[in-house]
Length: 294
Ligand SMILES: C[S@@+](CC[C@H](N)C(=O)[O-])C[C@H]1O[C@@H](n2cnc3c(N)ncnc32)[C@H](O)[C@@H]1O
Image (cartoon, rainbow, N blue to C red; front, top):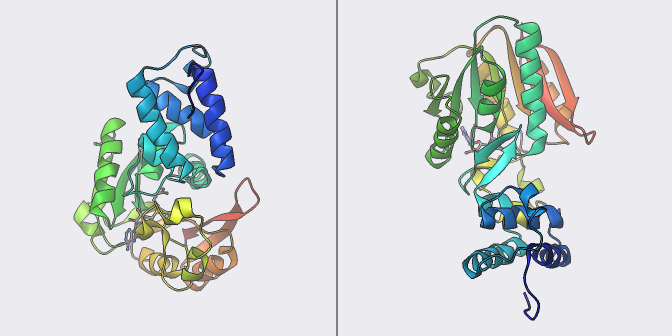
């Protein structure tokens, strides 16, 4: 940032937006606003009522450091330590995947199932591969009838999950369990579920080569990569869920946009899943597969 003129909020936002645009940062203006609001410890909307204010030197220094890192494609969510998901403000660290807007589709369909097909029932739900806990916490917030087990193989991720659960006061309804898929789920005290939801790793070795730097350099590979053809987690989840889904229980999995037909086949060949549907996201891409147990 050059000097000469006063660095008021308006000028900081304009300069940073141009800088991000030139460095091919997506949503340049939004990123500039999130970083500046974070540095000033205020809401984004407040920036617009304070355009003429000049932040203090220490705040400017912190902002400048984050601007540099963001221009080098470090994700904004890790820089500020949170990400919004389903109108929740969730803590994120580099130990967890940054929750994606596409994953809100899974939450919406799972909530429809609870509200429309299991009306007035108390249900047990399992969120496999929970990461930040975004899916479980969004479900808990909108469906008081759910008791949820959140599980992940990563202890570092589960530490973040626990803090997010505490933040939203769901410790009595959401239990955390470290497990390699279903292997240790019984330790949670529950073994059978009315609903299983999962956004597992699904990027194949081949596809990983095409992933943008901002993802491959900063987000945990454990959260992203599935060996070989990228379908391994679906095969394992479908095979093992047979013993953990209660009668008429539902399974929801997020998928990569090219995986719809293949995951559909995995569901179909299971022999115990019915009402199998591949659902598209708002961009028209296959994003979710859901089914119920026969
Ligand atoms: C794609 S991320 C999803 C995180 C979160 N549910 C979301 O939607 O943002 C996948 C998660 O699976 C976890 N994971 C990877 N291998 C696993 C395994 N074998 N068993 C359980 N969890 C696993 C990773 O640690 C990561 O948190």
